[in-house]
Image 1 (tube, rainbow, N blue to C red):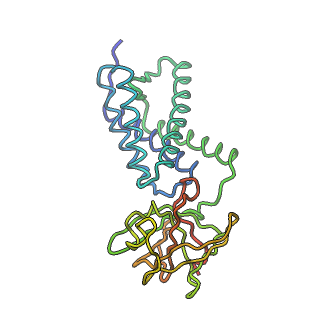
Image 2 (image 1 turned 60 degrees about the vertical axis):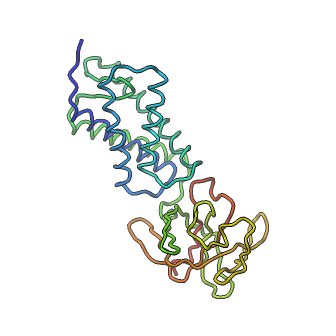
Image 3 (image 1 turned 180 degrees about the vertical axis):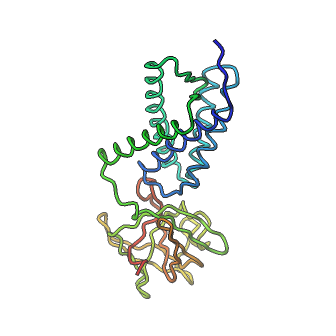
Length: 280
């Protein structure tokens, strides 16, 4: 039996489903991206749903296509992102998708006359947009409730984005406001943010880019720290411009230093540790 598929309904269905899936992924891992970026990622997935009109490909081709489409959704939504966090985001997106697909297949089994179609890994559901929005919102609400019950979350206000500018080049990094971080430059006593060296890339003084380079140059300060693992000092510099965004508020951090750390921070979920004193 042939079924008529309307392109507008196909794109709308997958747009809404992908949007709420990405919202769930963002919530589980606390990645500070706006809803505009989530919508962009959902659009990438919705356009990829047009593969439903092609003949059923070989399973390995279908697998590669789904991986590429999922990766494009994650990058469109969360870029820039570390490799480790990218793998976490991609894996959680698949887990959320499997759960949603299971619910849809159960609904289809209970109501065979619904007209729902799953082909080439793409969902087509000929229902009214209002009902679809209600069902997708309800599914997202259920996942949000599950997230609140099963994991101890930190307040969203603790997560932010930090923009570091050096010699006209800027880099946007994911940050976490940590009350246990009290790092400060010893002479001016200005707060210092701890940043991953790999995440900064070339947005730092040239002497810090080279392994074993001499940090004792003009403009570079050694900032002492005390941690559970021991004590030491991190090379720090004063960027040309430093901005922090929490929620919808963006402010400039005048006079704050950036301490460069060669180790990974937070298991890849954030790249900057921000002391609360930067807001004083």
